[in-house]
Image 1 (tube, one colour):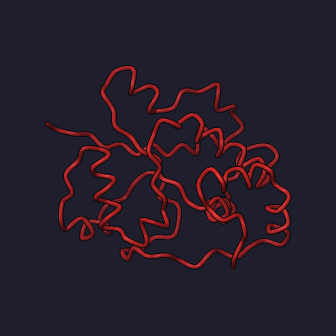
Image 2 (spheres, rainbow, N blue to C red):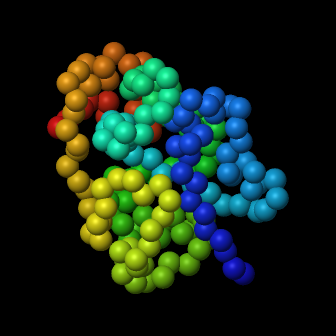
Amino acid sequence: AESLVLRDHAHSRYCTEVDPSKRRGMLDILRDVYPTRSLVTVRHPIDSWLSMLNNDFIEFPDASLEEYCRRYLQFLSDHADLPIVHYEDFTADPDSVIGGMCDILDLRVAPPWKDFLIAIRLSGDSGRTGSVIGSRARLALPDGLAEEARRSESYALLCRRLDYAPEIKH
């Protein structure tokens, strides 16, 4: 059987002025018509927030870490039935994590998959790029972010839900 793999970059649903509950996501639409398999990839909330700041992707009112984490929690609630894959696990052991993702998605792993990284461009590729998979140093923290994180209830809840340490290390 043939498979079509789609990447749903949910930024436009959860991180804009539009209330996410007023819009259906790609998976919701596809599930009505086709059999689907899906998973969610996540990253430490501070790193994803820093990436959004760095790329000037903040498009929602109250552009704060608290509001971002509240929206991230909504995204997770809307996708609660899906397995979660951590970016940090992927960078630590790419072959194992790709194998697990392919198992979830019922896909076959092409053994030289890493050889194709440089040639494949995906929508939503807005972060740091390169042909080597590995952990990267955290982006610089803006003044006050560590204190904002300590005060944010949604940040603490999100870290617990995703099994990340809430402490911010540089």
